[in-house]
Image 1: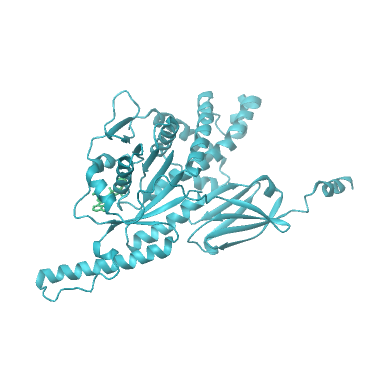
Image 2: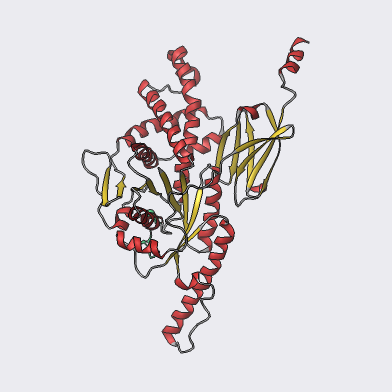
Amino acid sequence: MRVILFTGKGGVGKTTTAAATAVQAARAGIKTLVMSTDAAHSLGDALGVALMDTPGSPDSVVEIEPGLSALQLSASHSVRRSWRSVQDYLLTVLKGLGIDPVVADELTGLPGADELVALLELRRQVESGTWDLVIVDCAPTAETLRLLALPEALAWHLEKLIPAQRGLLRALRPAAASATGLPLPGAPVLNTLRRWHESLLEIQSILGSETTSVRLVLTPERVVIAESRRTLTSLRLYGLTVDQVVVNRVFPDAASPDPVSDTGSHDSGRGSNQTTWLAGWNEAQQRGLSEVRHSFDPLPIVIAPYLPHEPVGPDALAALARLCTGAIGDVLKTAPAQGMTVQQEGRGYLLTLPLPLVSAAQVNLKRRDDELLVAVADHRRVLSLPSVLRRCVVTGAVVRNATLRVRFVPDEKVWPVNEQESVAHE
Ligand SMILES: Nc1ncnc2c1ncn2[C@@H]1O[C@H](COP(=O)(O)OP(=O)(O)OP(=O)(O)O)[C@@H](O)[C@H]1O
Ligand SMILES: [Mg+2]
């Protein structure tokens, strides 16, 4: 089962290219579901069908044509209600802790119910085993990043909260609230937290799986490219594999090598203005395309033409997919794993994390107990260190070849054990 998520800046054509990829895959005989994490109904608009909620059923899968189904998330999902109660509880507790500004930062980024509903639904569909391919049309980048960072971040919080609360509940229940100043969750909230913790770990394993990848959709404009570069870094930081960059709304002449020399001497008046206007855009897009190639190399790039009309409905979407250059139909191939690695190097260890398009100055590292905090701009990931690194200290870090490399050596002041023993016996 393959999962492909489409993300990118607002309005660049995520829904359109996601739906076009889905139609093409389905027509090639791959059993495909296309679903949207977006509460707006634009997936249905692009497919030219009404994806209505069926009363009584939490979500409705609609068959668009043989081999292709689409899913619109329901606005009245029960998860929304239970999430709100848990979210309120988490907010109170974490605010009550009032100690770690980093945690507080993360709090303000706690995603809402829509994101959680989408992730739970993705898991449900993946586990159903019904599909060969699930295509997820995501909301614009910022929300998507929150969505994709959620399982790990929330699971991390829950891991910290659940055992502490369980202990409190057992030993101190009557006095705990006043002793710690923290409200205790009722049993239902605690059970929900535990269930969600499990679900989040499962979602995390789906997102981190080698059969899941992200396609970054953009248009060849400077502002869009700049944001997409940052998005690629953030996606990699969160451990997601990006397997393709889709450049959408490319003017026919911008994609060819020598397009804009013919400004047409016979043109005059309005015609000439239009030609100048078009030549300007062609040139801008050409520059944009070369920046895209330069920025995202070696990722495969798909170029989707700017059609003279809105591609609405399966046939128009399939036509768009056919007109694309590049391997938009490569949906079953998996990209090589790009996760964190740890290897022995001399006396110590080298931890690597692919982190494209950043310089060392933009990366912030912090060691906290058994964790390594890696931050780039607003995005932060808590990496749980493998046991071999827990007894080590960080001796240096560099960014080279689009990879963060952190060096660790054993902390000999504390380890090995016999040295500790000799200290203890003195
Ligand atoms: N290659 C194309 N040629 C012509 N029109 C296009 C193309 N791609 C997208 N469009 C049109 O552009 C509009 C925006 O596309 P779409 O809804 O796919 O963007 P989006 O990135 O999903 O937007 P949002 O951020 O709001 O979710 C739609 O009207 C769509 O039909
Ligand atoms: Mg959309």
